[in-house]
Figure 1 (cartoon, rainbow, N blue to C red):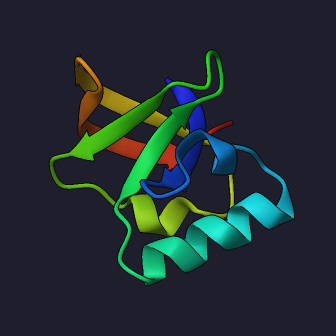
Figure 2: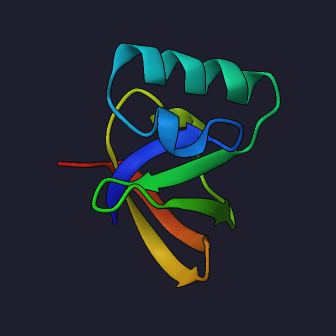
Figure 3: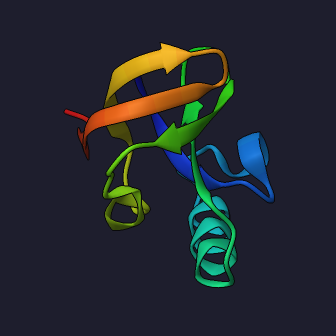
Length: 82
């Protein structure tokens, strides 16, 4: 799936590439909010489980691979979307 890393506090409202959304997501995660994934297709917010490097991908669109169960993705890989 392709989309954006956001924060659990703001969810889909920070699921875009705008500078404001990226800065807010960084600030909220730094302050303790969990990183989440927002799908670019439908703006759905997914919790991230498993070992992941979501915090390293706050500045760009990402491609997330893993197993989806309900509203949680057990991550196998997060990388910059091409």
